[in-house]
Image (spheres, rainbow, N blue to C red):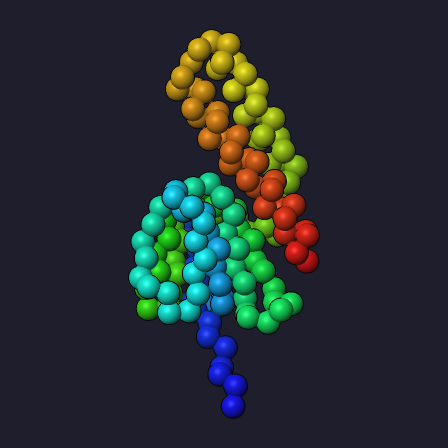
Length: 148
């Protein structure tokens, strides 16, 4: 008799509420010190995340659906077969308005250029973060199209 598929709960939460809640077989995240893949019965974990993509493979089957989520950093906590990602902002790929993300990228690039010209370190740092967030949203959207 085959073993039943071992899935665990995956939640992505922001200050505005739950963005994602499904069961998955693997969650791929990018922590501040590198990539992490979390599976059923993984050791308990609490680690900070960077602006990046979260990928949730919904089952172990070869052609399993993969959900893509753009996050703006945060934390992942895994225990008792529940992965909870807490992020300042998060957006499923299917909900990303790519034209809005492109406009945000262009605004950030403009602010970045102006901050460099004025040697304004504070504005420079903020523009760099805004640019990374916009580029991440565009990238997550585009990668999700490849995995359809």
